[in-house]
Length: 146
Image 1: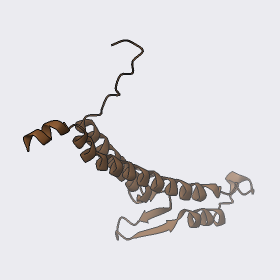
Image 2: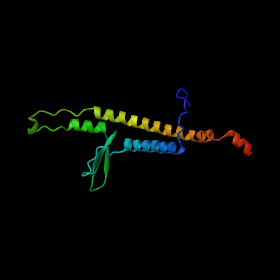
Image 3: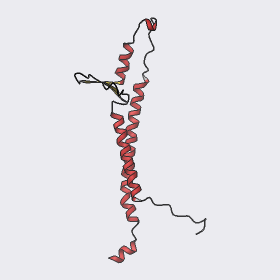
Image 4: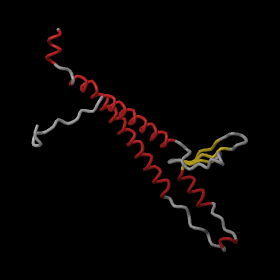
């Protein structure tokens, strides 16, 4: 065989394809968990407060009752309740940015799109497995055996 001749492309083994499908599904599940969790911004020492892409969750450790607020509501509440004391010399500190809730929604949507794309890729790869198996069958040998 000379260098000018094309060599056939290596065919992925079924085991490699199965591993790739499992990785796609695991990554999609991790994205979905990350998109819906309220513990992205959580302090492990203070388990009563956590923040996610769409909202914040505050739990009362005594009554074990939890309250969930959207990030927009949290920013609005922080803007309303800014302190004015001697530390600020009578000036109000800057208001929190309204970009945080917006970017949280964008990130949430992109995480869902990415998870869907990974699941579609896994489904396509899984649907190709029988075709790959069939392509390895020698037709002439199969016809002779019948």
